[in-house]
Figure (cartoon, rainbow, N blue to C red):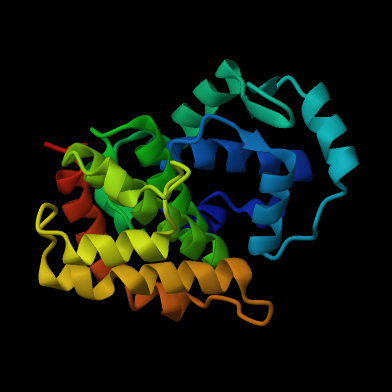
Length: 243
């Protein structure tokens, strides 16, 4: 379920500020596997849904004092308390049930593709999907670039070619160099479609990260989404992370 649908389903517009936070916390946990939320993060969801941006200091105090939440693992993070979570499971059973296909409709990477890999790969995939579904397209592009880089490094490692991607000081070469080496590598044996689109993801991420006047649009991400999924799946196998 995407954010807009969830908002309509729960009639968030009629809820109080704190009730919205409770419901959004449950949405992030149930639909995206989040283990907690930050005050800044939930405030951004308010803006995405075109609600008035809350006063962060005041909201932080409200959340801290509310029995609906418990302190998260670090810093400014909170999570929904067990009692409130149980209440929402009863009130919103459709969110508690597995709905993989529904969640993947507007996502970039099906979670089923990475669920049996490594924790940080799964975390990056979830962040990519959440960024895209919440219209944070520059963030999506940068995270997509990062996951490609991570999987390329692992692919070279799994083929015993780590030395080829290190500079004279032992540091990993730039993504531009990694892609150039990967495309020519007879060990990795990347498919032609993946070779053809690898640099597209690098450029897209670079524009979003470094270009002063560029802002990624949904169409920029959507136009390469299928190629990206194919690339990630192939690299998961080349890296040995997925068997």
